[in-house]
Length: 499
Image (cartoon, rainbow, N blue to C red; front, side, top):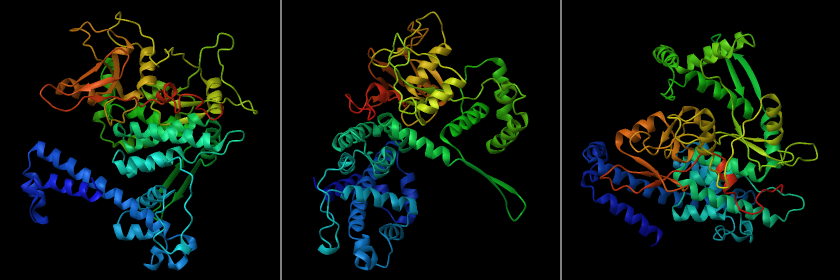
C-alpha cells in the first residue's frame, strides 16, 4: 500500500459516517448525532489520518532543513521564502507554537540523516549525507510504520540523548547499545504517555551510562536557584529552579499534604478519614493550600513534629537501586577514582534518576530496606495470613509496579491501592505480591464497577480483560518502575557502559 493509498483508506473509513458529510458550520451537530460506537470508530480513523499526515509533515520538514543549511545562505529553501530558519518557516505555515515547530524540524532532520533527502536541491549547497547508520534509525522506521508518533520519537531522542565517547570503548559498540535501547522504548511506547516515555528514556540512559548520570546530576544541581521580585503593583513573586532530588522531595510534600484531594487511598484509619474530609471541605484552592503549607514549613522549621506539618503521612523520597547479594561485603557495587558509587538510583515511579554519589549520601543520612527479589524481579510474599498487604509488601509492590498499572495512568505509588487479582473472600485469594497489583483509587473502583478483570498466568504479565460482552482485546499491563530495565536491560549482555 502506498502512502497516498493509506490516506485514501483513512478518508474512506470516515466516509461511512453520513452525519459528518455536512457543512463545516454543522459539523458539531453532525458529530453529536453519532452513536458512542461510531464516535469511537470515527475518532480512531481521525487519529490514523493524523498520524499519516504527521509522517509527511516531518518528512517535508526534514527536506526543508536539509536544503536550508548555513552553507546554503540566502539561497536555501526556507531563506528564499523569506524565512530565517526552517523552524520559522514551519511555525508560520502551520501556525503551531515554536516548541512544536522545533520538534517537527528535529524529527525531520533525524529522519533525513543517512538518506539522500537533500539531493534534489542545488548540489553545491547540500551537505554530504553520512554513510554511517545512526543509532536512532529504528525511530525513523517506527515512525514511518505508524508504530510511534513524532512526539514519541522526540521524547525518546531527548531522553536518550546522544551516545557519549568513552575511552577504551569502541564507538560502534556504544551506538549499538543506544540503538537497542531505542528499540526497546519503541516496543513499550504503545502503552505509555509521551511524558512516561520520556521518563523511561532518561532512566535507561542513566542506567546504561552511570558516569554520564553523575555529570547530568551535577549540571542540574548547579542550576538550582531561588529568586524574588516585586511587580509594579507591589506583589512579590518567587521563582524556583529545583535540583532533581529537591524537586522530588517537594513533590512528595505536596502529595502527602494534598492527596485526599488528589485521589489518595481509601483504606485508612478513622483519624485519617476525618482529616481527609476536613481537607476536602476546605474552601482554599490547591494552590492556596500549597502556599500556606510552604509558609507553615518555613515557620515551623526543625521545631515541629512531622505530623504537625504533614499529618499522618510524612513526606519523603524513596529511592530504589539494585544489587546482587554478596555474602562478604554486602555491596558489590564498584566505585570510580573519586570513590563515587558507579550505580544509579531511581524514584519509585521511575521519573527521577540519581547518580551513585547522591545515593551514597542519602544512605548516610537515612538508611535502607532490603527487598529480596528472584531472578525475574518478583518480590517475596507472606501468604494468606493477612487480609491487607503489609507495609514491606507495599514497598515491594511500589518497586515492582512504579504506580498505578492501569494503561495511561500517571498516579504514583503513594496514591495507589493494592488490588487482589483473586478475590480474597470469594476465591480464597492470597495476599501475595505475585497476586496483587497497584491501582489508583479511580481505576480500582472502575475495575470493579465496570466488570474488568486482571489475570496472570504464573509469573507472567498481568493482563487486563474487558467486561463480558465487550470485544476489546486483552491488554498487557506494563510496570512504570525503572526496575524493569534492570531485569530486562538493553542489551542483555554487557549493557552498562561503565562495565
